[in-house]
Length: 465
Image 1: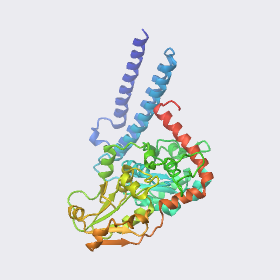
Image 2: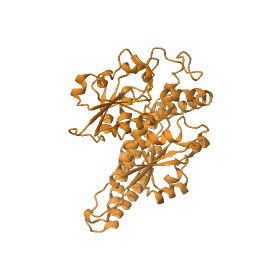
Image 3: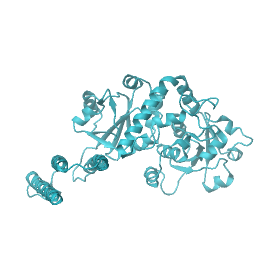
Image 4: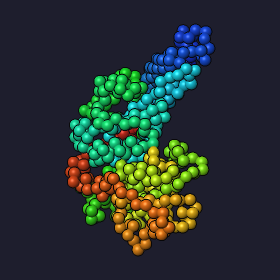
């Protein structure tokens, strides 16, 4: 009956696609073996043929699905969910295909594939770093445009919390970034795209799979029209909006919330508000990029801290510490240790989130998880530490003036160095900036939080509420 007819139609379409594919390849390359196909021709023909065949098949199958009798409301919801899943698979397959074609082996020389990714990167976090990692994997060279304060304010109606220099410094310190373009405009016009292709040799433009709209228009419309756009999966569970939400729990007297309507969580770490689910695969992906593989050689420098809300000040301190030796080992304290000594709702970011941020810094050779608060002789001997470093700007000055300095053993051994921090940025400074703009930040936060929640629900087929 109906099922047999549907199966027959689907089988016919599959046969047509297969036949057209063989005919298309034969028409393009004749009797030459695949190894003899010119690589540029192969790329263009494969992409063009694949796109045409898939669109044809999708159109016919969609028509067949519409011709079937209507189902229940539950079935309709399930079909919509499957459609969204199919759209996600198509997007991820396109990205994977682009990466494979870009890295196809060639007997001759080819031009490096340069990927461009831009953004505000305010309160720069490991979600941004993971986007850099994924975009970098699409080609050979990653160029990152950091949107200017002015262009962000013109498009969003609100300047970023961090200024241009702070955001540019944080992005440039990422090990997955090869080059930055300061003052990049928020909206990618066709003229700007052409400029990037000519002056920076950009091959493709990348962005996360979440929508990026201004006044109802896609920011990357021009890049898509030129066939130069590809998406990368967004790191779910983390965003600048999410971090601002955690910061809203923090106040100077720790009794009132910064934004009206946000409830301070008494006796709770702000990091416990995190929706991020860390996997060993993601940790391995970040760790695989570390340069310090195998045995260590030369002087080992050790520096520890919370590294909460990893920012430009942290990156600059690590850069200076790395110049003191050959191998930089960075200790990251646990949530419990940070909260015990810092108090209030600290830390803002969980230990795994903070570890990922440190792993993403180009100056770091390795990371010590759940680092001891007090450095001991045994620890120095076991880790073969030659120098222990501390910066002059700290989020918790009182923490090093406790009854016992956590670095007192290193000082007694004469291996302690204090470095002058060139940037004075701190969590308290960031909270103060939010405090001074609490009305406009609060309104923007609530709107953005709702839109992100709706996007997440639509992507995963979750009912509102």
